[in-house]
Image (tube, rainbow, N blue to C red; front, top):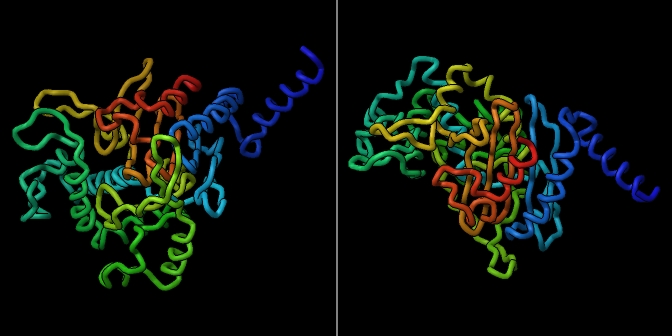
Length: 352
C-alpha cells in the first residue's frame, strides 16, 4: 500500500472515530460504511433530502443530513430539519395511551364506544385498535391507520385536553423536542385548540413551519417536482411534525414515559383469533438473525416518508426522515417485514 493511500485510509478512519464529537461508542467502520452507502441509496430511491440519526446506549452517536430539504433554494437537509413524520405519529399515541394504562385511567380491553359511541368501530377494543387487529369478521392483522387514528380520543380524555396540546405538553416540551410542531395547521386550528398555546409558542411554531422540508414527488426518471402538502388533520395516526433529532429525544425518553414491563408488552407480537401478527402495541415487531427488531414507518405518498428501527438487545436505534415517499413507497412495509427496505437491510447487515 502506498504512503498516500495509507494516509488516506488513516484520515478516513480518524474522521469516523471523531464523528459526533468523539461520542462514538461502537467501532467506527460500520458508521463510515453506512454513511457511504446511505447517500447512493437516497439518490437511487429518489429522495431529495434525507436526515438520519443513530443512537447507541441511549446516546446519539452519529447524525447526518443528505441532499436538500428545499431543492430550489439549495437549503441542505440537516438532522434538525423538520418533516411530516406521517405514521410515526402512532408510536407517540401508543406511548401516551400506555402511560394512561399505567396510571389506571385506561383499560385496553374496554370498547372504543366508551369514548366514541358513534364511531363505526365503537365495538372494537382499544387493544384491537392499538395492535391493528383486522376488523370484525376477518382474522389476524390488517394495517389500518384510519382506525388507529381514533385512539386520539381516549388520550384526550385521559389527559383532559385536545390531542395536539397533550402531545405538545407531554412529549414535545417534556423531552425538549424543539423542532416539533403539532400539525401544519396549528396556526389556523380552531380556537378550542389554539387557546391552549400561548403567543410565544405559536410564534415559535410559525418559525419552525418555515423550515419544514419541502415535499417532492419523484418520477420514474428520478426527476423531483414539488408535491402537495399532506392532509393537515392531526389524529392518533398522522399529522405530527418533527426532526430526526427530535425523534432521537423521543426514543431516549421512552423509559421516562413507560415502565420496563409496559415497553416489553408494547414490543411483543400480538395474537388475534389465534393468529400471530407482526404488530405489538403501537410498534411492528419481528426477529432478525436472533435479534428482536422493533420498528415503525411513515408514508405520505408523493410527499414524505420515515423509518425508526430499534434493536433493543443491542441498545441501537436508527431514525430516517425523507421529503419524498422513497423510504417507504417502494417497499411493502405494512406487511410487517422491515427487511424489505433497502435502507433497513443495509443498516442491519452492517451493525448486526
